[in-house]
Length: 202
Length: 279
Image (cartoon, rainbow over all chains, first blue to last red; front, side, top):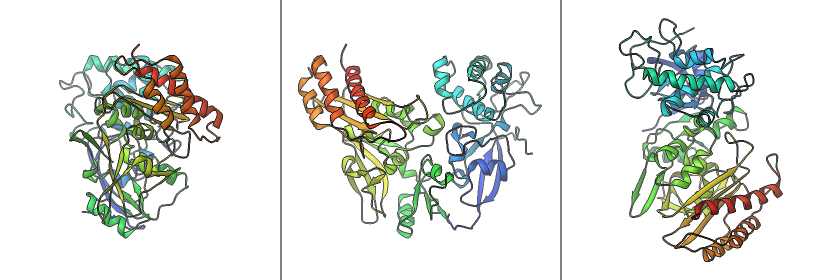
């Protein structure tokens, strides 16, 4: 079976973003980063270099970090995406990774921050007790021109400790501590489950 | 830019037959970069991500087959026991985000002289599997790579995977670039001490129009090695490095000079060999 679309045709793309089914009709050339920002109005994902170097556009595709500027939206039809909008709790409480970036001054201008936060979420899901070298390696696909990275390194280290303490999956929406099932709405793997939280359409 | 999104090889070949000039899209880490920089305006794109037959790997009758859609992350995390040298090569590719997207088939199809998996695949005498309406064929990697970014793939053909022998023995891959992540190779060296066939296998990247090997260097060091103890005399290690460097045909460009590339690959050759020997 094959799906072919012409140059000026618009193609229906259906994805699950932060646990919420979303759909839009887009031209085949639409980058995933532009699809998120322009079509779904989720502007938390930033676009820096647009050729796969800076990492500002990092999102999770089925739980793994990718550069959304290097994928066409039509290529991810049917998949699960997690963006920075899907991390904080419904009441606005920051996700442990976001809180750690704030606590440790892991940002200055903030432009690269959504990408760093998403990379950290993917990295900490795989590596729960990282040393400094592993954190540098895990964050190596993101560039920051303000901080000099020391604060970012400290933030990822703090987040790793906080996540180990809570047992939460860093790829899911933050659940405040009084929730009996803190941080685990999506089960063992994958981003936030289907309870509909976490989306902030602008 | 029309796009086709076939889900099996037959449909992919139909789409290729209908538009033989189509650009094949796997992980997007080469093609989409070119599109975004406006260096390429594809007439037609065939997206391969959903072609399920291109996923996964299998081991049959002592040989290994890796599907074209296997990502660098899968090699790095899931196949490190099976193909340790390829896993080392995969870890040098781009960044975690790039490794989650980029594929072996894409590295073969792009055929950059600096392609990170190619030196190890060449050392292993890998064969590239190609499917077409006329039937399937497999081409040794050395014949498949015909020049910088050019291959023996015919317009109607699809890279479906790569086949290689199972080889016992220590192996190592190292790469030089300005930093550890997000760099295109300045020089790359792969070595396999094939203890079953008692033969040293090598591959060198970014030091010629395609990845290269030095049959003379391989032959000499194969004879110099003590295969039971896995040791090698120091002068033979030095000679190995020199012979590898001499077999290169590097260019000077914005990434490095020909002299540096030649020197560096000789250093990498000595170092990689030492890492494979008993200490």
